[in-house]
Length: 250
Image 1 (tube, rainbow, N blue to C red):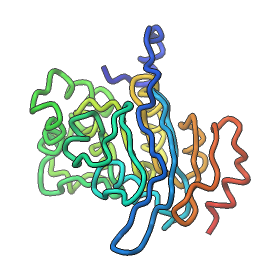
Image 2: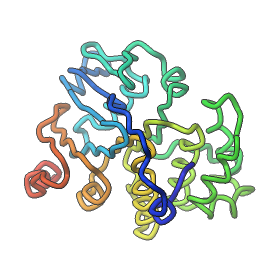
Image 3: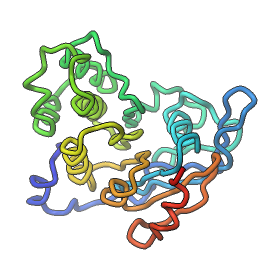
């Protein structure tokens, strides 16, 4: 079940937490043509943890996400999902293995209705909804109200909620969010922050973000990228925010 933070607070802790990391990148290199964009990245997303990757524009963050979902194949290194080597797996197999992805720019279909966009999210489940649509409507009530509207008329924040909801409909065990707070009004950023907090403990989340405040509010662990490589990493509770800010300043 997908729960907001307020509802999740009333539940007992899950009796079992997997010990195998949800995601491991081991020395991954990613290229566009002959240009190396990501160099030797090693990164771990532990089970039921929220991890944030930060860095300036052009640092390689979105390229890294595309490598994780299978849109780019590493020339060196390996990618593991729950201990299984998926480096050569195509994107659709990773989705069916439990990877949900919200790309930068949201990737909605503007000429389809909100409901039609959401229905696309059922594909990893073989088209079976099993009540999960009601769960995402609980997380994002505005989507139920606007189900018949064309998605392209929604505000940027509502489109981001739609993109996240669509990814959650596949019941992912690993959710990837690329710049979820980018260009969105503060009230909806706060809602997305609450949703991420509520999902903590139910799934693993890897997000790319440039907002230091947002990242440190939601993430258990942080990685900082510069020119395609990891230059700083650690638990958000102990990571030097001033040092991170230096890598984010243009």
